[in-house]
Image 1 (tube, rainbow, N blue to C red):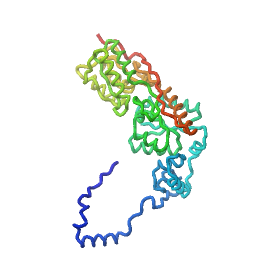
Image 2 (cartoon, helix red, strand yellow):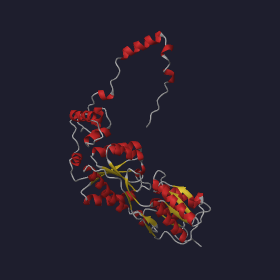
Image 3 (cartoon, rainbow, N blue to C red):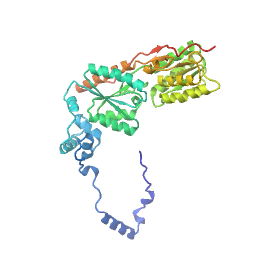
Image 4 (tube, rainbow, N blue to C red):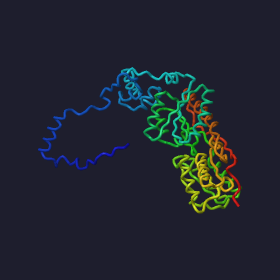
Length: 390
């Protein structure tokens, strides 16, 4: 929470305007108040007794940021000799025990500790990713540490916990894959970062993704081939780049077919099931409704299916519904969803392999360049799509 300071414009009057009486009173008040408080870093900090000393205790004792302490402990070159000595003095004073896993990492152990920082509301997506990530980390003798967060303050706390655990790199699933503040925070601590499933890769961060634009374009073409001209679209979270890019693919597909987009049939969602319910209700409660709904992910498509059932609309005979991602949810609803298959488990495996290679290259004093790994998508046709109703 930010604090707004009270304006001091009326307190900063020129000294010439002050009377001797005012100055005398001020001097007397200052004398009673005693000496000014010492700077924060000049006051010895003592952790609570009986509690293990943490990296953040060391930071407070030294009067520096936690990121600086992390860089010193990780033996990175971006810290001055004076600052390094200052931090190490606090380490010794507090008898701070450096995390054993972090020590092994710095000493050249083959084990790599990889953090996964997530705030994705889709349990299906995260489960698919972790399935592949855990499988690959087991093969590479790496470790995955999972941290959940929400707002910026929660993200900072989660990053600190991962640093405390001595992670070498962090994978950011959506939507954090597009969070520049989070990426900068990790880079400042000297941690390797990989963005998973971003639609617009950053030049300084490796990524694993599919072509969301082409995937949405392929789905739109499928709907047009089925004879649909009245197509509704449910957008995803605007803070996540695939949301905009998938919509761009839809727009391109409609333009390619010479079809106009009815703005009343383009509804905002958030990639969540609940937002899909609200969006589908708007589309299906209208007097003039679309014959097909293309939702930006499977969670919202499944929600649209539930709303259609509630309105006694038969899918796909009276309404076609399609999704995106092909998570496990796509085949647990009825009818099963036509969707764009994103190989999420395979992307998890690729992400773990790629970040492990980068970490090992950095240990060998190399300077690996970011790698952008593009994986293939597949259009999967199932029971939720059919010809336009006659």
